[in-house]
Length: 233
Image (cartoon, rainbow, N blue to C red; front, side, top):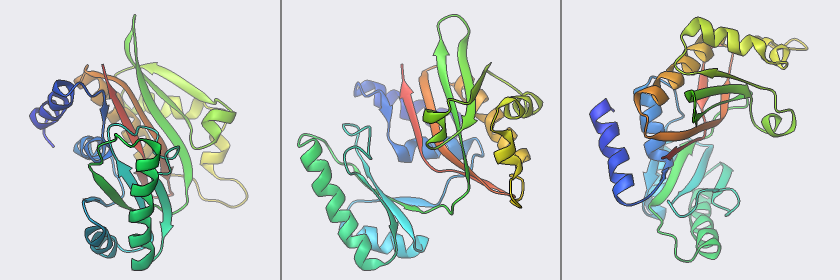
């Protein structure tokens, strides 16, 4: 996705007075900055969801896509670990049922069928716009750790790869990323590149008020941005 296309997408959401970009658009934007995301496609029907799940290869995750349902998990709009065609069909129907109960007026764009990323060490990368300094990028341990430990560090964007390395090495949970009890170290090179790319993204598009990628699952040789949220000004 080129810069002009990203701008068009952002302007389309703003014209509809919608601040939250849907996950498929978020992942398109991340991919345009060479940030890996698991294979995923948008399904409009149950049959399409089953076919896409087969194409991606099980296990998969199904997620509701709606601008009126921001917190998908709270709405019962996410089902993980879908292992076969029958489960995919049932998950599609269940998510629609849950979404309707959560917000009967919600417009459902479709169901996002995403390859389930294997377990890995989880980190978070985020950004907020500070009134004085502009975009500020944040890094820390992800998943439940970000809420419990609040082990995060900040920098004014943009940063380069070397500065990203410095950020990563500042968190108290660094030993978890380096590997404990025989675990291999994560791919620090890919992680620092991703952190620097996110910092450039939020500078390139000042329309972005907040960005949150949680979790990013990091492995010894790669990473995946599993879940992303972008909020416009």
